[in-house]
Length: 258
Image (cartoon, rainbow, N blue to C red; front, side, top):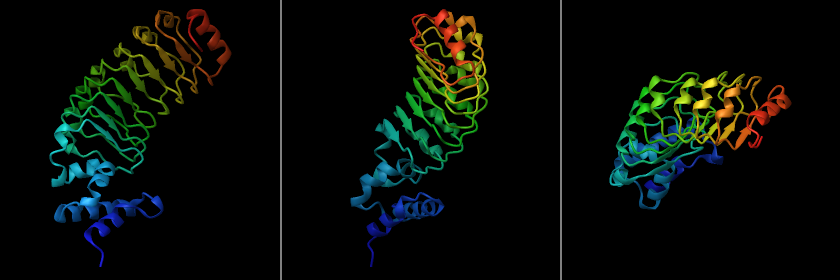
């Protein structure tokens, strides 16, 4: 007869590392078992590392003393389907990485993470952002790449401490004007979109050092980019009329690497 530990381990570890719907059902069953019988001693560390947010959502007693001091979560490529509202308990969280998962939305409770500095939700299934994201005023790094977000809440402009922002491969046809509020940006990346021109207000990004806009439909660059005095790298490769674009960039910003 299998022990609880063996049963739970079998449910949590997918056959052939296939993280499909059946595995999700098995994970749910495993957590129901652990909520009743406890997390086996030999699995406690592994369960926490691989299923941190599941542990939080199911309020497993073995981890109740962990949440107040937790500073980082990294759950990339884990087939995570949602970020539970209980994430609001993580008052000292500084970094959140949940890339390459099928997450369709961020909960409004994400706004409770007042100390969050780095957040990467790249390659999920997000189509919008909650207005509460504007409460994350200590964010310095944000990666939204590979999602389906086309508009941004008004509160998004409150993220004025951002230094690194990536919106690659999002089918964007223009750079959202809200970006020009982020005057502390050092790196801005819009690679593999459908952007045709840069907005004149990009000149407001006086601290920008790297602008990555390769593989777009870019045909127009405003003369105002000459005001980006700190710019060191301007990647405009794989755009229509690439040669002419580079000539204009070089004329306006002779010291920039292109």
